[in-house]
Image (cartoon, rainbow, N blue to C red):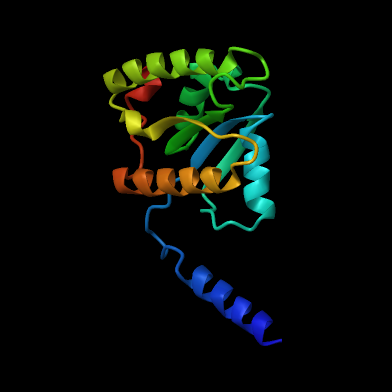
Length: 160
């Protein structure tokens, strides 16, 4: 019974630390591979690893399917940052999907500064199915980095 009370107090304290009204809380859209990162995200959730609630998952069959226009659409729709995460290089279920994603993200990061968007708002990572802790750490680090950058300015991005 004391353990339950301690857990409840911890949860209440954690909830009380949420940002006060008016403080910037970034929204992150994550395009994740069905085979690896989505499974890691599920593992992080079922293992009750502490994660920021700022994440919105979009499950893709492969990160190679993530078109740069999806990333731009996410940013224009209110996301402050985008995470693209899939299988480790060499482990792709579709053989070369993660290499395709890497090339697309590089091109996207070359274009974004032309429209006044900081490239740190888009992150590509590799997270295996058993790496729930790595997924949680990646999300938490990205949320903190985007929080430091502040809200995104999409005025110039609309020109795309």
